[in-house]
Length: 200
Image (tube, rainbow, N blue to C red; front, side, top):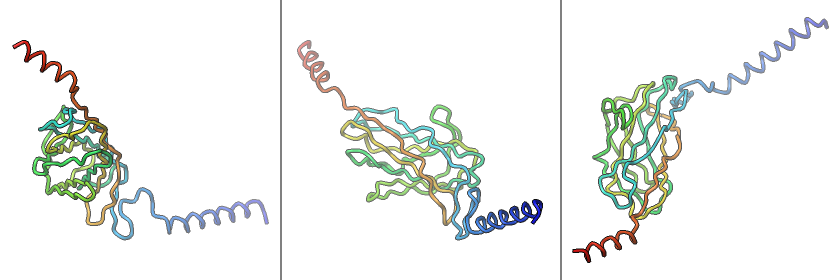
């Protein structure tokens, strides 16, 4: 067999192998699997998660989750699930006070339309469903309002998972938002109170 023939045969075998593999393995850039499951082409990102009220037991706080849905995501985002994963005390939320808007708390854009907010006490999950879904190329914020901050100081991790639009959608976990709450300095408080009372 000539060298030219050997090269041709090798190329043919390589093409056949590649064709065989790709016929069984879905492309990583496909947005929909054969069973109808929809997923993001490019992953959204959790840019930040924070609260301006970090003291334990405080009422009226808000927890902000800033999410980027890139232009190349390929699918609109319909659902955000926020789950408490770490924390001494279960945080209770006022579901009716949940809000969402384009941009960030410092550069707030238009409000987003929320279809429903659901709570699953057994899994500690809050699910926020948008209607219409959020278009790719957006940075948006979900704001949860707790009934109050935890009674005890410490670190609380709230994991964020996002889902594209569709009846069969594949959720993507973006990581946890880290919230650190601090207890007041009781010693300084009581000392100040004692001196104030004596002064008067």
